[in-house]
Image 1: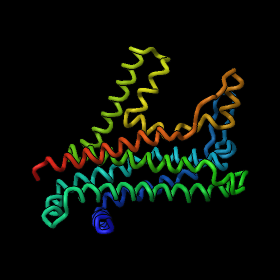
Image 2: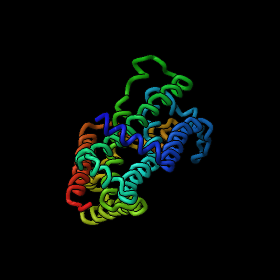
Image 3: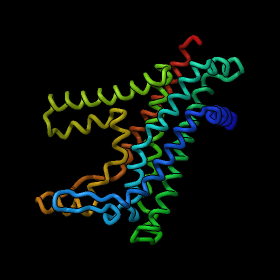
Length: 278
């Protein structure tokens, strides 16, 4: 395992584009702290995000993991380019000649996925902890370290998403086309949603139950949009006679679905490599 990780880290260090993308990604994660200066109007409500409790413990874990996940496409590009470069630079064939098995090759890429997801999760944890202690109204340890399941969901979300990217990179062997295929799959899931609406009805309770098994939908479901928890939006909703009753919790079965897809993507990548004549 250590040898495989070292191989991937050496490749990463020698890839300038990947280093630039990773740097941009972590700079964007750091920029989440700039949200405190954002002000905007929603009808009669004037919202200053810093006053809405978004950096209060434990809400900050939900809010920051949701925002950080938006930037995951930068690391997806790193994963896909690392895979496709193996084909274009013929390093994959050379690695196999040098004694690396096909199983070890896929494992090395999966270890890279785990490392990038783990480092991202640790970074978000530290950033959130610092912001929380600066801006939160609640600093008791029991409150600070509650709702940490959002960090677990964030880690699983990244692992699942990057594993999908790994599979597409192995399947298509071209970075631009692999990323394009990811966007096409987003569209396909949208079409499936429209088909379900047509046959089951617009408000059918079965639609989300079926859609939760689609890969990108499952990944998205891990961390729900937290903005409905803002004080101002709750106030506006109450003024117009509405009430937010949304379920923001992280559920074990949602994590299980994404982990199942992750296993499918990694195994499918391995089977592709086994069948190919390199």
